Length: 205
DNA sequence: TTCCAGATCTTA
DNA sequence: AAGATCTGGAAC
Image 1 (tube, rainbow, N blue to C red):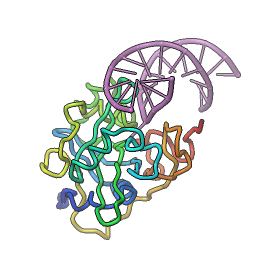
Image 2: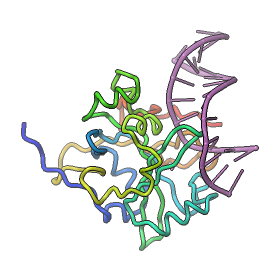
Image 3: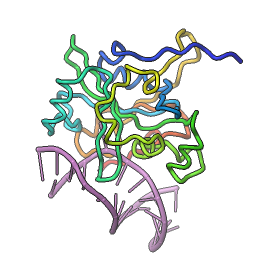
Image 4: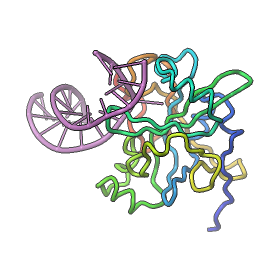
């Protein structure tokens, strides 16, 4: 079986509404150096009108959105121990800026390294959550501000041609937030064993 | 299978 | 003071 030509998602892809980007990223391939995986779960966060987005409370997040181009990684430490990977989206026309949180991958390359970093063997335990994913790939504070559209070593890829079997994407509410809990801004592949939380199982506080 | 506490630290 | 999480152990 011959390898299908892949195209890296560029700044133009991320120059759109974060909800659109989040949904379309499901099924794409994410490369991080020697490791890679299929994106199976994402969440969208909107700069304006979304209480769960960092821009709502954090001046530094607002400055980041204003000062960085679309396709830049926004990485931050959560709960004092886990690094979470986001991609900046900027839609100049509609002013719908925001982030896509990378929540889960199906590991495809560099699996031995991921197993080592995670101290786990099972594939479904390597990248099935935003903290796990960063741990498996070795993402950390030094990656905050890195461009995901400038080098083929770090970024997202899709087959060039379309019309192939489409990914079955479900909409669900977001995980782990206390504000704006009703928004269905989590996107996940149906029946995928690599997601963090199954469809309809997010617990609300 | 579900629930819970603890780890740990940046931002505001 | 709260938080876009994860883990192991207790409870059922």
